[in-house]
Image (cartoon, rainbow, N blue to C red; front, side, top):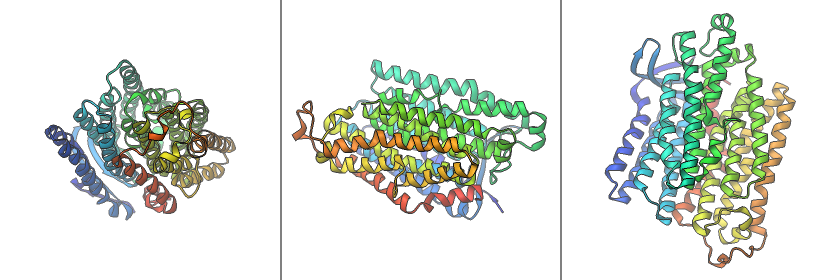
Length: 498
């Protein structure tokens, strides 16, 4: 039996990440103190989220209402199993990203570093707010906070390419949220008189049977608006902002792809499907299979596009588009195994993908190379970086013992459980394509001689330790999560009562 714990403790992660940017700015003239604030804030945020875990694992839900706006609309926070997956990942990886940021920003002597760190911290504030949102209104507020404060990060270089990428980024994300997500929220309120998620039960959701029976078309349209409005999930055709955002510094790409932005997107999709509509309504209105088909098309098409990219970050960007769709497809199949695999991939993909982007940034800092075709032999000069890259790649492919295998095993078996052979074949094809665009990078790095264009090859060596240590650590954690998957699966099982 689920119990509700009314406590302001659930506000702690949000409060810490709210004040952290202020202290970063106040220490702008002392770079060591400025960066120490990010470390301390990350540690405190992680500890505050983790402190709620025992009660959540016992089957309880933390909840606290901060403001009443009007009847049925409040700013309310909660912590359940799904919340803690995203909240723990975002705060934990913030600490690793801070160390990496130090090495990257200082090595390249980047400008506007204080603005960079402030916006980075506010993005984590938005991510924690999304993770802990107890209703659609609160989720929408923090969803937009992430969008607004990651725009300066995407445009960080302040050149024509940076502004063009940032413009596409903001148009896609703000445009879809205003055209689709906001109307979906309004329609939900009109139909129900409230925006509160149905917590503690993934079966029934917010929409009672009488509303669904009386207004099936309106409920279906509302659902379609939600899925279209959450463009951060990068489902096609609303995915193109993500490759365009690769003009940002590599740590920002890691933030976009592994920590805050896209994870907020797929988290929102999971929350809307499971705590908003619920499995019963999804089945009743046949909403799951079309959603899964869109995700299956996205993961297959994005994998084909990734094969064509010689720029390492571009290849990783399209890989992210594909991997996010595994999460959406898994949850949308609505079988217990598939839903568990989809939610687990939120965390598993985060650790593996941040490892890959950290490695890409370390390669650039050490060699100034972006093209895969010029990276022949680099693995012998940068064994730690490319070793971690290999681990992250195996996770994306879905090879044991790395964590990506666990979540994909659940998703694939969930497809068989649902009798969806078409989706099963899409997963198999995408896995083969994943191997097709990751394995050649590893082979080139370790087994091919350097190409003539890399005249500086003999001078290459590992990037600074502040960059190498985080990427090796996240790579190692990817293996540990594969060996000990219960670390996140327990939160999933208590959330879905699986």
